[in-house]
Amino acid sequence: MPDPTGTLTERQRQIAAAARALLDAQGPEALTMRNVAEALGIKAPSLYKHVPDKTALETLVVAQAFTEMAQTLEKAASQGLPGVAAAYRDYALSHPHIYRLMNYRPLRRDLLPPDLEERAAQPLVAAVGGDQARARARALWAFAHGMVSLEIDGRFPGDADLGAAWQSGLAAFGE
Image (cartoon, rainbow, N blue to C red; front, top):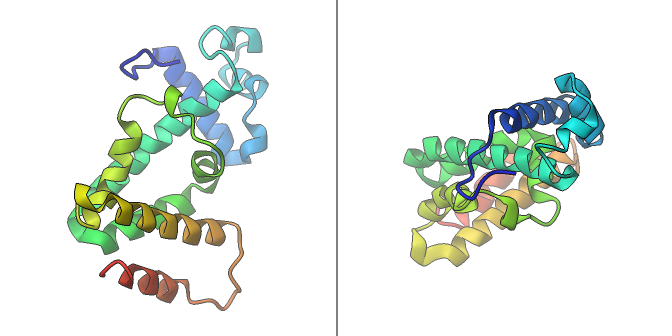
């Protein structure tokens, strides 16, 4: 796993990239130690020298995704809440398997690099009023997560105007 600063070895970066490629291409069922080892051209026991178990493997991928999400939301921050919300939705819909891995199960914060989750949340916090509005930011995240989860999982009727639903939800946050 990463050292206390969140730094990965070169081999861990390769492992994370291979795992992510498998997840993106084939879904969560493909994310196994054996499949990642095969993708790297090594035997599974060699993989365990760098990543102790599947939880650690998934955490490498989740940490990479949180970094991507943070970068995506940071780029959209100048557009305010509508831009941040659109960037969040676009990221989730473009990467449904990683989004599910990040958000559909308990988050192993103890295995993530320090402050990474905070970095990813900061653009949402800023979009609704800054540090004094953390409860409001959590409500925004719950709204955005619910909307994209239902959209990813195909739970809306085919004729649903999701753009209008997003705009209605964002209006509750002042936009």
